[in-house]
Length: 346
Image (cartoon, rainbow, N blue to C red; front, top):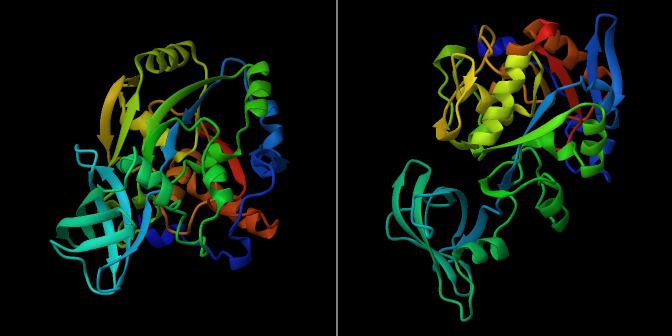
C-alpha cells in the first residue's frame, strides 16, 4: 500500500481559514445506497440510531505557541508539547534562525522566559521561568502570553476568536496542541437534540499532538511511524461503551482522535479503562474492535487521517466522496465541513 494511493488535488480556495459564524452551520456529507447525501451538521439528530453512544474527546487546547527572542534579538518560536513531569519543564519543538542549543535563553515577555536544557533535532527540553511580581505561575503565563497553535495551513496569526472557536464546547482537560476538530461542530443545543433522538454521549481524553499535521514522508504506508499521544478513559465511560457493544448498539466516534483512543485501548473487543499512551496507526485492512461509525472533517491528501477514514468506510468510496465534496465546494480541514461514515459502507 502506497502513500500516493491516498492523494487528491484540492483547490486552495476550499481550505477553510476561519470558522463559520455558528458552530453548527457547517455542511455534512453522508451517503446511503442511493448515493451521496448533502446535509448540514444540524441534521445529525436524523442520523442517530436509538441507543447510539457518541464518543467525544474532551481535551482542551492550550495556547502552546510561544513567540520570543534571544537576548541577541534573534526570533524564536517554541511549540510546547507536554510537561516532562515537572510543571515548568516541557518537551517542545523549537524554531529559530540559528538552531537552539543547551543554555540558550528565550525571552517571551517581561518576567517570562525559557531556558533550553537540551536539544535533539527540532525537539528541545525547555524550562519555563516566571519572575513576575504577583501570583502568576507557569500555567498562567502560558495562558496569558501563549498563542493558539493553529494548523500550518491556516496561514494567518491567531485571533481572539480562535481562543473560543479552536476549542470544543466540552473541552475540559488541558494538554492538546491541536483541536479534535470534528467536535468543534457540536453545541449544547445540538447535543440535547441528539439525546432526544436516542443518543448518549461519553467523554474520553486524548491530548492531540502536532504530529497529526505531519506529512507521511515515506511512500510505503507500513513504514510510517506515528507520533505518540497520552489518553485517559474513565471506568464509567469504559463500562458504558462495553455494555453498548455487548447490546449490539453503535459506538460513534466524534473525530479521528476519539476513534484512535477507542481502538488503542481495546483488547479482544473490550475497552480498557485507565491512562496510557498510543502511537496506533490505522489504515485499510485494520479490523475495528469498538468504532462502528465516525463523524470527521475532510483531511489532507496522503495523510494518516485520510487513511484512517478509508480503513473504516473503504478507500475507493472515501476518495469518491472527496471528489464529490470538491465538486460541491465543501470546506476542508480544521475549520471546514464534515462527513459521516459507518463501517457498514465498506
